[in-house]
Image (cartoon, rainbow, N blue to C red; front, side, top):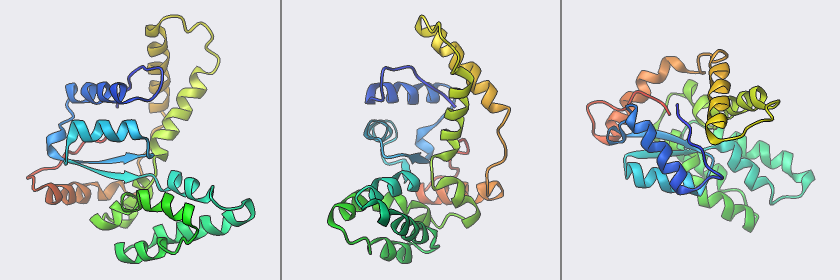
Length: 208
């Protein structure tokens, strides 16, 4: 895990974050699965840093929210269910056909932009028990929420190193609450899938 201080999300900050991870042992040449919420800066940095050695899994929850915003409030629950049911389908072609039933033009354009990346797990045939964890960015969002709670009463932030100190303290606090992810027993299978995908004798076994 790593973090890098910046005024906002931008490509340079994201790239420096990746460089820091690489300095601590992350090897982008082995291939990896990357979960993103759709942010352009992170995506561009991943592509620049990893080239074609990264497969992106776009967060289905973020994508669902973006799509449903194109519908009236009273219609959103029904479309949320349709999208969730489609992403729950195990096979890639079945899930894709179900998602393509979104017919409102603006919503369809929003879905089309990230459609394939929301189906990465189906395309790779990742074991179903592990998909619940990998289909969203919730694991890292949960860590962020814990850091916010740990730092919410901090007033004298002062210089940048103070910010890093408190964020690091929040991460240590969050670590105490970590538990096994859903489908953790299938992680060796995921490593084998990535190794086969990238033609490597071993896929990277760390997560970031």
